[in-house]
Amino acid sequence: MSLTRRDLLSVLEQIIVGGVFTISGWLKLVAPHQNFMAVIEQYQAVPHLWVEPVSLIVPWIEIIFGVFLLLGFLSRVSAGVLSVLLLSFIGLLGRGILLHIPIQECGCFGSLLKLEPWQALALDTLLFSLALILMCFEHSKLSLDAWLSK
Amino acid sequence: MNFKSLKLRSMRIPIKYLLVAVTLCALIVGAVFTGRRFLHLGKSVEIVSGKEKGPKDAPIQMDVYSDFQCPACRNALPMIEEIEQKYSPYVKVIFRQFPLEHNHAWSLLAAQFSECAAQQRKFWEFHGRIYATQEEWSKLTDVTPRFIGFAQEIGLDLKVLEVCLGKEEIISQIRKERETGAARGVQSTPTIFIGTEVFVGGPQLKERAPQVIEKELERLGIKIK
Image (cartoon, rainbow over all chains, first blue to last red; front, side):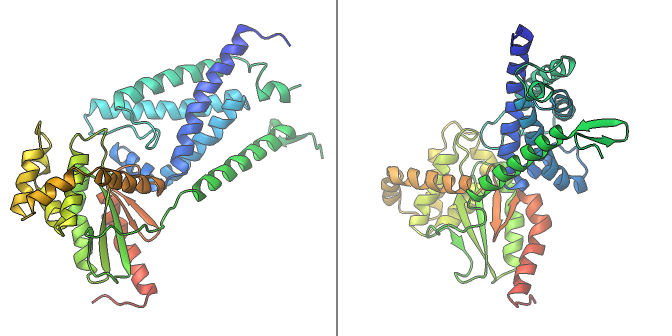
């Protein structure tokens, strides 16, 4: 099996994007969901009735598609789903910054890593770019997709 | 029936992809639920004397993880007090230290003073003063004289206080309490536990706590007047 530079770059991108979402989802899921509810509430953007369902669903999407991407399984679909999430995070953070909403910290990684809104915005923009690249290219030869398509 | 692929409308999904997806999802769900079991969610921890308020045998225990310099904790106080009054004598409140040292410069020192006040059975007096004046002392470059002022106002023995503040074990006790909170899933302040229910911030407490308390009291056969 001959590996191209693109294959190696894809693996690196998968590890970065998939890894971040796996960790982020895991940290939210092993803690009471009320923590993430409080994070969502501080953005003042989600209707009150939706806060709890969103806090319950989003972490599962993060971890499932994070793990999928990390392993290179359904890479383009996973990168697509995570791009949609990233785009909504970028929108929420950007709105918060523009409207001067008092966001203490982004709430992205539970208590593990506290990021200021502008730091989270920079990270999400970087991850979004990487996810877009992953969506544009065929899966890496080192991915689970490559093994399954044999 | 073709066993190698499932035909969903016009899209053909190879069955091996479905099997891998289902297996991965099952592994993820299993890992998450195993991870959750390592948390001590809802389990009460030992009471540090002097930081509880309300009848000792009250059936409802509210564990309040709080930081003295956190504005959200100050804002949640009226809601906590409202619950205490409404459901008295069935509720006891226990203050748990959770100083966010990285965000709030004076939170650990405030916690130290409060622990020393607790040793002189004046915790709640100090707690009241410090939250009432939080906005003012949070901006100071040196809060020690201000905290000593509070100590004098509430009648603490300053010599005993000085000895207490010098003890390393007070800091370890505070950090231990914080670690216990983190193990129970506390990530921000205030986080309040009522039985197995968790409330993060005052708005969640105000909205959901009365239902939880009333349900528990009903279960215990207690009718509120």
